[in-house]
Length: 264
Image 1 (cartoon, one colour):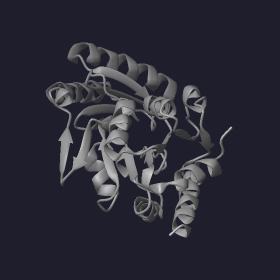
Image 2 (image 1 turned 120 degrees about the vertical axis):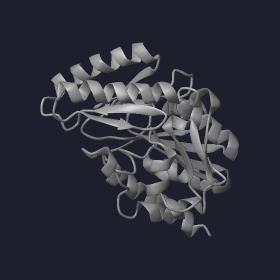
Image 3 (image 1 turned 135 degrees about the horizontal axis):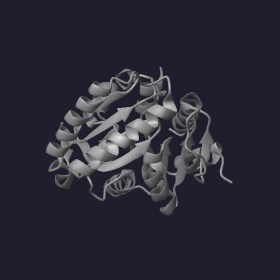
Image 4 (image 1 turned 90 degrees about the vertical axis):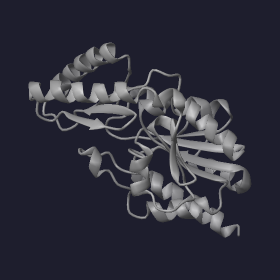
C-alpha cells in the first residue's frame, strides 16, 4: 500500500512531468456551516504558489464556480477548474463548455423554484446556494438533519423532474446541474491532457470527487482521500492515501514543497 511519502517521491522524481490537482472545500478549506464563508487554511496560498513553481501543473477542480475560486486563490499559476470542471479560467476569462452553457436558463429556473419552495416551507437551517451553472441546497445548519435531508431530497427530485437537470447528492448537500456527461473525472482528464503530465495525484473528500479518483487511478496516478466527520463510505473506501482532515493534508503539501525546494 502506498504511503503519503511514496506519493511525494513520485511527484518529485520528475516535477516537469508531474501534476497535483485538488478539490477546494474539505481539502484546502475546512467545511463550514456557511458555504460563502469557506476559505483556505492559513498558509495554503503560499504552499500552492511554491508548488506551482516546481510542478508542471497545480490545479483546483471544484464544484464551486471559477469566480469563487478566483476570489480565494491568488496568483495566475494555479489552474482553476470550476463547476466540476466544465468552466475554466483561461487567458483572463471564464470559459464554459457550450453543452453546459445552454442549460443556464434551466439552472436559473431551478434556483428560483427552490428558493420559493424552501421559503414557503420555512424550515430552519436549509440554505439554497446559486452557483451559476448549478444550484445547491445545504442542510448542514439544520437542527434535525435526517428530516431535513429527506425533505430536501424530495423537493430537489421534484425540481429536477420539472427542469430536466441532474440531481447530484453530496456531503449534507443536494445539487442540480446540467444533464451532460461531464464530471470531475472528465474535467481531470482534460487538464492532464492539456498539461501533458505523466505522474498525477488528485485530492478530494466527497462523492463528487469519485469520478476524479476513478480517472486518476485508471491513469496510474494517486488518489489522496481527505477525510472528515461526514465522509461518505464510498469515498472512504477509495484505494488511495488517506488524510484525516485538511490540516493534515496541508502538512503533506508543505512536505512536498520542501522536497521540491531542496532539489533546486
